[in-house]
Image (tube, rainbow, N blue to C red; front, side):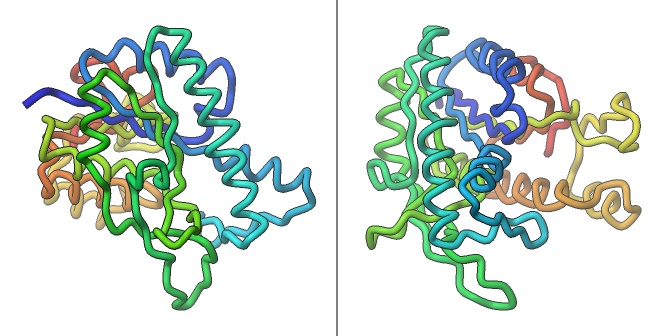
Length: 256
């Protein structure tokens, strides 16, 4: 199988010009086939404020009403996505910006209302790896925005970590996939205050132990749960690292 690296990058890195420039240079240096999945939440929050639209969050997740959906579509599929595509073209990378609606590549269902009504938020039902795989084998680098659709004409705001994980799983039948989650820290840390305390490898048993001990907590827990799901679904390896190390072998934390 051909190797493919799927990189998910958080909003803060893609929204600041200097960090974005460095990230894309490192991304361009990755050998072989590749895919980039990005966020953009901070930019969406800033634009919403300028338009007088209140941003409401519940446990770190955005409530997406009709007005907020318009804002995130403008920011994610427009401003952030096309800026990344243009910057990659300048680096010689033949990038193509996509939402889940393009080529029907990611179909979602609107999240059902339980204790919280998240509005126009999508839970991924399927990823069409056939079209995506054809594009990749033609030398195209997909740049995927965190929006999907329901097949009924509605766009849905969708968690970028989930899009990265589901896309990696779908492509694992066609490629030897490495899924890389990159953020501001050099990896999963044993001590949150010490960037040198990177845990080099984490198994499921170690993960449960670290959670029980309070070493791993907060938003890192669902990120690692997604990582183990991806491994069980055929993804070859999952790495959590900082943006400057995405092209380096052995950097960050490897989930095994």
